[in-house]
Image (cartoon, rainbow, N blue to C red):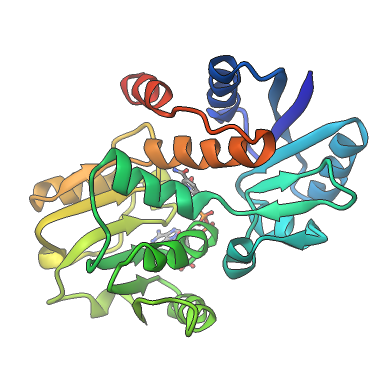
Length: 270
Ligand code: NAP
């Protein structure tokens, strides 16, 4: 059995072992996939021990995606642009890293939710690891304009500066107070506020007619989704992104692309 894992802290709640077990069963791959909690100060030690014991690959989740980027001897271009790694390939001479969060979000939007990004205006809330992972892929998928809004505006500006010249979209960074008067086709909550329940003050006219509100947090109704519903927007949680980023990692490791529909249906219903 080839061995894989998701490494995070905390990680016990992770749906990834179940998702990858379903993918392996459906595609006939002989592999195991477990959750490993690394100590906050022990990410590199934990990955190295897993690799030394035969681990062939791993997903990385909060709070280690930046550290995983620095751990890798080499990475994909999308991981370099994101400065964050969520997929480790450990069965090469040196650890190699990729970031599948962006492609996961774009596939969920375009394929599962039938939301075409071409020409759209997008508000990306947050400038942490998740926002860094998806900003460039949203532009690559054709978004015309991406505004990155963050409590710490300097972080949003750093993200925009980092992508300047690499993205086809017009980019702007701002704070929440500067949002009034702009209607967006897509608003993505890439902050961690969904977990705590507090929401930054958002203007009522945030959503253009027919807009989609997407919360990266999955499996629960959040203050952001409730706000969006009340404002008349269509809503989606991050289950589809979770499944699609997992499918891309699975493809990188196994060379087989699993069908995501059954897993996504079970996760959304469950
Ligand atoms: P992170 O690096 O810790 O970044 C957190 C972000 O949230 C920062 O931009 C931070 O703003 C903002 N924030 C935190 N509390 C806030 C508040 N009270 N008001 C306004 N903004 C606040 O976390 P991350 O890795 O980017 O993850 C963000 C979320 O995405 C998490 O909930 C994670 O579970 C989810 N996620 C889901 C998927 C999926 O597959 N569905 C994949 C990746 C991530 P400041 O910079 O101003 O502090």
